[in-house]
Amino acid sequence: MKSIFQKLIWTGKLAHAYLLVGSSLEFALWITQCVYCKDQNACGQCANCRRIKHGNHPDVHIIVPDGTKIKVDQIRELQREAALKAVEGQKQVFIIDNANKMNENAANALLKSLEEPLQDTLYLLVSETKNNILPTIISRVQTLKMKEENRLVDEAEKNNLHLKYLNIYEDCNLSINQLEKYKDSIDEWIDVIGSTFSQNTSNALLSVQTSWDNIFNDKESKHLATVLMQSYVRSALLIKRGKPSIWKIDVPYSWDQLVQLEKRVNNIQKAIYSNGHFLLAMEDFFIHKI
Image (cartoon, rainbow, N blue to C red; front, side, top):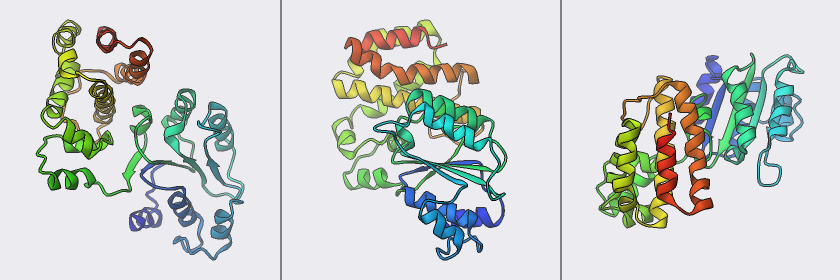
C-alpha cells in the first residue's frame, strides 16, 4: 500500500480525500510525511518529517475524538483552518482519526467540505471500519482497505461455507460465527432486501408485512437486517457516482432520494431499540422511503 501512495505523490495524482479502513494514525502520518518530505519518501530525517512525527508542523492538523465522539465544533474548526492559506505555502493535511466516531452533525459538516474541497487540501480519514460512516461521505472519498480483504472468504472456505455474497458480508464486518449461525438463510436476506428496495411503496410494504418478521426472526438477525440495509444504500450512492459497488443492483432512486434514504436507514436502529418493534419500524421506513 505504501508503494501505491508513493506513486500517487510522485506523479501528482493524489485525490483530495481518502478513507483508510483498518489503518492507523501512524500510516496516515507516514502518508503526510511523504507529502512534505524533501525526497517525497518519508525519510524521517528531514525537518518536515521530524516536525510531523512530533506533531508540530503548522500545516498538518489531527482531529481525534473529544471523549467518545468527534463533535461538530471540531469539524468547524477544521473548516476554518482549511479556509486559510497553508503557513508554509504547501498543501494542508487534515487527519481525522477514528472517523467512524463522528456524530451526525460533525459528519454532515465534513460532507460539505468533501463536496466542495478547497484547493491544496488533503483529507485522510482513519477508521477501523466503514460502519457508522455516512454513505454520502464514503461516496466522496477514495476508500482503501488496509486489512486483508479476503479474511472472510478464507475463513468461509476453511469452514466449508458456500455463500453467494461474501463480499457484502465483509463490507458489513460480519464475523465467521454469524455466517455459521445463519448459513442457511443469510443469502436469502440479501435477495429479500435488494428486492424490497427495488419495489414500489405498496409492494415493498406488502413484502415487509408478509415475510420480514419470519425471515428476520430473532434479535440478532433483525439487527443484521439494518446493517445490510446500510450496505445497500452505501452501494447505491457509489453506483450513482459511477464507482464500483459490491451490490449488483439497478438503483431506482435519484441522488437526493438516496441522501434521504441514508438518513432514514441510519436512524432505523434507533427506532427499533426505542419502541422494540422491528416490523413497525420497517413498515414506517418503506412507507416513507422516498
